Length: 153
Image 1 (cartoon, rainbow, N blue to C red):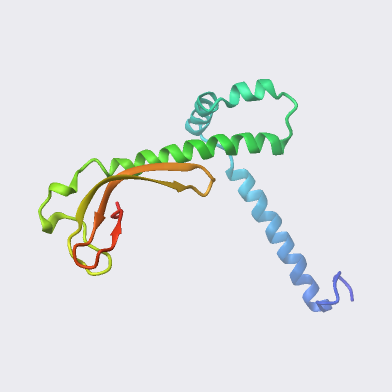
Image 2: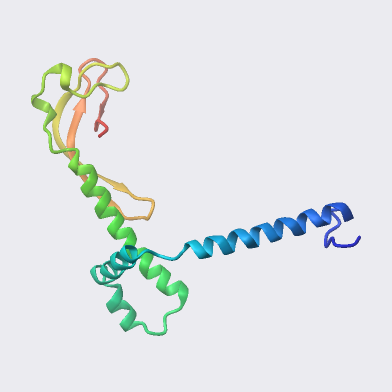
């Protein structure tokens, strides 16, 4: 079996495997070349390093390994991500729908009836990065089926 390092392929198929490896290598090199960052992205990165405390962290850890640096960056980015999520979600909650007419109120996902507002409540969600996000929103209850929930939005 020439050109084939495995009993799973034939001599004819061995060339196909080698071709796929060459395609993957070309793809990886193309992605590597695309990783040139714009001047704007570099400027944002430099600013975030300072804001997130990573510039100081690096000074305190001059011999950190790739894995240690990546863990430190991930920790700070996850905290920033949670704050951004919390802020963006709360942007949509500036309007008090409890005083709106029935036609303008959020509807029950189960039966479609307009919800009654049951006051503001706080709940905590966990992001995919493991950080907690605190949301304070108007809680709604359905007058017909009794289901209570935070309306989407």
